[in-house]
Image (tube, rainbow, N blue to C red; front, side, top):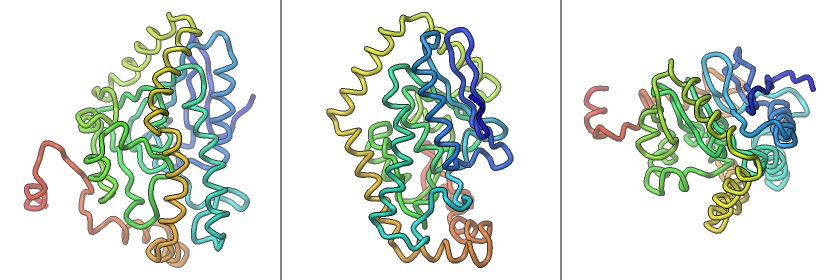
Length: 288
């Protein structure tokens, strides 16, 4: 199958799916979500594939969702749709992302550069995430655009760090993300690909039936802790959050003054926008 927004290749038991809109920092469009779903389903059907890798081309894993999509694609709360219609759109996108969770074969997320907003919705569904130490991971849109439409934050980082990041929109580095549990491991950027490939090669030596059995039992344990239901609830909570006046203010500014101006209005007052586990909040404020 030919894809326009991703690259798909298989080799030595591995399927590599590369988000391929580098000129837009791999902003996730509706088409990209469809193609990602189709590629992962193809990998799941292919008996030669044991493990899939999701990564990004260019300077980033993904800067988030493409919030200026062409007509006919996913729209936002400022579109004039009812909240119920908004939920419907969000659920359609969520069903495409959940292929990562539901497929029988393990999926490794390979994170470099920016992994923001929708990028986290995507990669946190992976079975294992390995990041570059200097990656930037966070959800800045909570400042003016809603809440994560997928929620694995609490399961990965625990409730306090989930709140610390989602109540401010601050980000962490890949190295800091390892410390708080958002990713399994962080390595120097130049070692990232080799680290992921080595792990994938080890998985590729395991029979696909055993990989499926052990992936799915862990996921079932998480589902007993509410992980699947939480994704559905996250959609509805985001749709509610997107009714806030500040969300409409953001999109009105983006329409009238441009997206760059709206993002500056949203983020400038937060300075570098970083949450740093090893430093006090006061220390950062004094330096800023």
